[in-house]
Image (cartoon, rainbow, N blue to C red):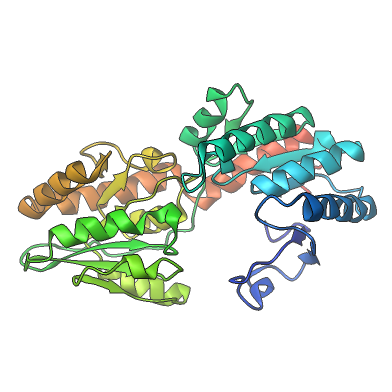
Length: 339
């Protein structure tokens, strides 16, 4: 929605790209949210809340306040309520914190209660997939969903006959993406001359990808990621949790067959035996992969169907239209103008 005015109040991390603002329209204004941190910190969270309230006071004429991520969702809803702006709030968690599998059950329970407390302050919670919405409903938290979407350019569909298969994934090498399981699957095929593995990305758990048949690309530009993805024949996700993974949508745009772990977000992107398979554990993943190696003629159909599914449900045009309609329902006076 580059034609509209956007004010982005943002924090930064150690891996935040330099000059990221160049990817946005010239109308976009950026305000650095200095005290915001990813993890829970009573001191900095209170400072961040006070800072946010003071920022929003200066922009009380905005039409919609759209909060991205669990931390911004919690602090932003409190700040909006303090200022009487709660009816303008949309909150999209994009992988809500209570889904995290890298924390204790106690911490997960804290995240659930924080979401419940946040919901008391008002605003519309919009999950980025149906399965993420269902997780909110499990805890009687109100939520709707609008699917994530991407722009998909035309791409050729790979022919798989008589070639070594490349099984690949895209993402930071973090606990969320479960590199240990990816490595375990690759090790099972170490002595197979018909298959190799590719991790497109890098991260702090790179050392867990030590199987001899895995190549790690390292950090790449968007254009380089697309080129590496061209070499992938089967897209494998071992994620423990997601919202609705953009990396898998990229693979679908490139017409790749999918083998995805059975987690929130991934479940929305595979129709069984249409564009791939969902697996629950290691042995099932191995069995599916072995079947795909034997029946390579099915991969073309899976890949073509992945792209069809993407074009029907997960394009950015549909996502933007859905959000525009949501914004209009929140503030009927917008008249196609959003801030």
